[in-house]
Amino acid sequence: MGRKGREIVQAEIDVKGVIDDLNKAVASEWAAAYFFWVGSVVQEGFLGEEVAEYFAKQVQGELNHASMLSKRIVELGGQPVDMIGKVDSMSMFGRLPIPKDPGDAVGFVKKALEFEAKAVEYYNKLAKKYFGKDHTSYKLVSDILADEVADEDELENLIGRKKSR
Ligand SMILES: [Fe+2]
Ligand SMILES: [Fe+2]
Image 1 (cartoon, rainbow, N blue to C red):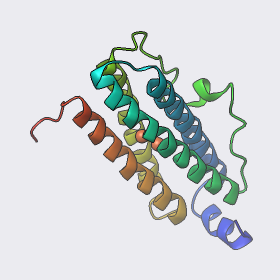
Image 2 (cartoon, rainbow, N blue to C red; image 1 turned 120 degrees about the vertical axis):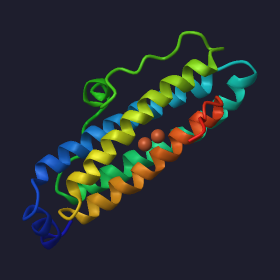
Image 3 (cartoon, protein in one colour; image 1 turned 90 degrees about the horizontal axis):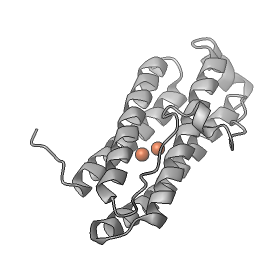
Image 4 (cartoon, rainbow, N blue to C red; image 1 turned 45 degrees about the vertical axis):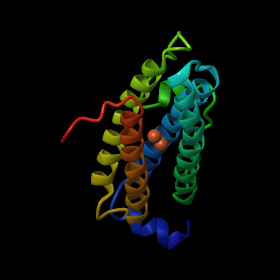
């Protein structure tokens, strides 16, 4: 980001803190992408095939989030974390265990629902933190938040857990 762009953010918020927040998000997106990728290749069975197809699409979605976040980190003068090997320790999810039974499509979806809920919470927290202070990061995390909300909804639909609201 140009000098002015950084200056106006710096005047309102600790830029180093924003970079750290966004790096934690990048690690989490990689963890989610990895989970979806494993799920997309190992799942078996009738429901498993449908879930695997959805998971394969999600791999691209979560990696795209990682790229969007990383571009903003670079704009802010930071470095997207040198990540392989640090994903588990840096991610907001901690270690994401992969269900052992490849036929357990519901187990895969439940695990994904758990981490999508955490992502929704985290991006919501960041959106509140950046609101009125760093407009570009605010817009970025709000857009990703909307995607994660949609992910949660689609996952619930996959296993028919949609409750009447
Ligand atoms: Fe994501
Ligand atoms: Fe997601």
